Length: 367
Image (tube, rainbow, N blue to C red):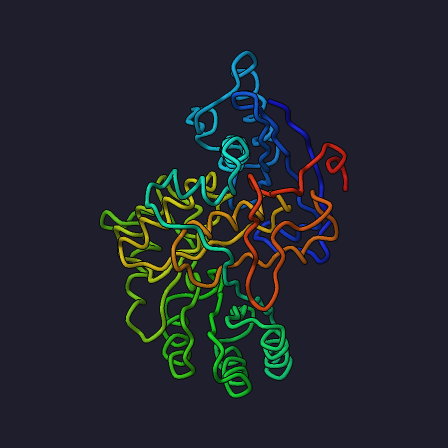
């Protein structure tokens, strides 16, 4: 197994709880399964996965353990238990090799792995994301997304007062009455503010609010505190989606479903440990009556295309957060294998993760 580091400059900084990120660093893993080469991407992100150093250490331990025999099965190594980005890379590479050997797209391989028998989708609906701004600027940005063909828009909220965000939502709805509108608070509210926002957002037809309360793994009466609080917010006329809450705790997806804490789960393959785990989580959510939404963590082209394949393996998936390629100034592939047009992302139909667009070593280092 070969490990190749990379660093991709962002077109604009990515804000996290630990500060702004100006580039995405990670590793491309290349391995062979029964003579067929597969590649996978590890792009660790603070607050979501292990650190860059921990990711590299985990990959190196796997490479050492597989020095004589390359992996043929999906990784279950203890060395990857706390390294979801590293496992994402190894699992993706194994699945990519299997798909190439079968001459089929990765989505087909993921469907076969899940055992649901459904045919993968040829394209997946995606949402546009609009950041903070005044009411007029926000409404104009949403209208621009609609003009570009997006039927679903996610609006960032929580940076201003609840009253200001209500005004922004109202301005958007007045200008774009038919758009499917989601809001993402990134855990910025307390319970009282969330209740006020949800009751007002319901009047404007907001489909769901993503992560209204902060993630908090503290147990309370046998259930995590944040899951209990989010469960209390359901039924106020706006759906509750969990995102950051799925990055903490031992089995966060299962815990969220057991607590009936959400109407939707935002599933990031990189944070969950691989596309196979994301598809399994999506099916578990669907079986519990919860809407799965797959998104990237602002990854490079390999992981982004992998997430598209994972979404395509989920029947009738709703609009996903996969239109993130424009956040990067440069990328790991010479061409985007999963381009976005008219509010949908095309699923690569060639073998493996990227079809005819193959990664080569020259696309690593600081590109």
